[in-house]
Length: 402
Image 1 (cartoon, helix red, strand yellow):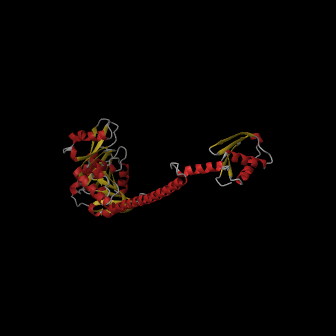
Image 2: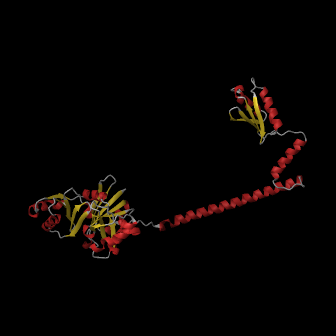
């Protein structure tokens, strides 16, 4: 995805003034550049991952003010009182954004009219922008230690004296006046002046008249792109929720309705299936209860299946039949299986619990192949052998008839 950089002209130029723009790829290459009214850049805005507004310096005031050591919400709440005596209008009608503390303890504060910035940001968001940031143009100028940077173009003079110091002035297109004003505002410091490439020769011819210590260079998008990346004075967060991307949920109205409908249909279907299975289960249980009562009319039917199993087991025991999970059957089958081993292990203990026979043998008397041979012999008698611990065997019935 690309980033769209827009150099917005000064507010004094009027609503229809042309904006300079550049579409920059992720690698930094400029894919497209030109000029156009902001309202005509909708296609570029929608196709870009991010939009960066470079606001005219004449529309953004930078104020270094004494500020208490506050941060976050408390600092934002204190900003109107900090700038009140430095601006002419009402601070409540301005967007105020504070920069990081300066070495001398002051804080730079960027001030811009809210009724001008907010509609512009909202218009860009309405065009389909995913993210918008706005930075003062004067803080995007290249800055060398000990020098002052300036730029002339689009009826404006920009000046940057420090990392968070700068200003913008509306000027006419008179090169001599622009040079003299830049020289006067920069003081005795060396001045690097960036001018449009097509007017570079014209300004170089006027250097002698403007005074010493001025270097004229060609302006380019590379300066502004690099400056926006290093700037920390983004004014859009100062708008609060007005500068955030508003999702258009109307386009999701029908997909959400269909999803809810699908969920409701599935819930109804699951409930219908559950009711059907419950009716079948009730019918089967009622049938089992009737069968149990017909066989055992004198017994209350609490759990027909368990009661029937108990009664059948009791009847088999009374007739002399031994169940395959009783102690006698398990012990006898285990003893018969031991006789088939070439070397019989020594028994340490034998315990019958929960229809399983636990046999512990002496470890030094076990043949390595004894367990596998016993499993084979016991499986022929519908029994299983599980070695739960060293020299510990648990024998259970598989439930088949003997």
